[in-house]
Amino acid sequence: MEQTDYSNYKILLADDEDDILEFLSYNLKKEGFQVFTVSDGLQAVKEAIKIQPHLIVLDVMMPNMDGIEACAEMNKIDSLKNSIKIFLTARSEDYSQIAGFDAGADDYVTKPIKPKVFVSRIKALLRRIDNNANSAEYENQNIRIFKNFTIDLERYIIITENEEIALARKEFKLLKLLTSKPGKVFTREEILTKIWGNDVVVGDRTIDVHIRKVREKLNLTQIKTVKGVGYKFSTKE
Image (cartoon, rainbow, N blue to C red):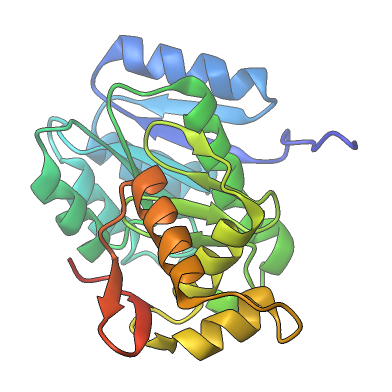
């Protein structure tokens, strides 16, 4: 398999904890990324304007200007609007995840951070630039980002805040279908046709079992049952 060259990607890390900066910087540099570090939100905005990073990682709680304020400021600057932005949050900062997305964040990672998962999510997010740099069409991207997980359609994996999860093929196709149009109710007949095909005879119970497994493996509450009709994926809790 051909190795991806990440040496052209610039990543800006903003955190007031030196050990976090060193830890994340080390793991990203090991993959070949160009890494720049700052210790507060105000510096992050200034440095971002200077270096024009492809991706910015912002801690939520920082002096001078917090990560949410910094993200909002960056999104006012035309040259930084397309930079991908990720928040680092402590588990006690659940409120900040919603505020972060409102400020224009693309994703968030919860501390304590697992380096393998962190780097994997960085690569998945940057793949949007590689595969569809000039398109804003959500369906044409090879990843789908939601508040508590990311779907990597190219590698057939789900990336949560703690790990990479490989679903069984039918389970993955089912989640891919439901998340393709959040809010849409997919009927049982539609699911059976799209996932199992017309040539395979399966019962309604087969769908229920696969839905249950996806919910359990990913600890998902967004897959909703519409009684007597089918299932939908909701972005609203």
